[in-house]
Length: 187
Image (cartoon, rainbow, N blue to C red):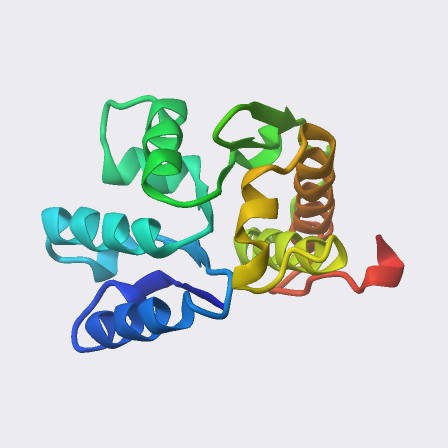
């Protein structure tokens, strides 16, 4: 089950989303992308608290370095990713735009470089990246609460494959106008 963005942070939806996610943990792996929209979040402290609540419910968290800079000004994103990994059950992924992405697991950190493309529009890049990660999780049979332990024990090569697919999908998305992610056949 995937959630994120303002629905998971603003009332009245935030409490409902947290409740649904809490209940779903018994049968589903949970993925979360805070997808911060500062203009829509009037209270910084509440936003941080809400994000941390959702991180603690998630198995996989995907965030951007920009999200982390806004949430924790002056703190290095990698340090925050490590802290979040201790809060959540499995994997924290941080995207860095053209620089690529990295993941923090319980016993490793692994990254992949970005892909050089001519950027037409950045809308949809993060969502496309997350969609690719979820697709790769499905392909690796990392779906369902009974796979939570397998997710925690993922080897670096499998995580690197997830990151690479996410970066490639996001690169195609930003090379096109509009939020227009590629099909599997285009990758």
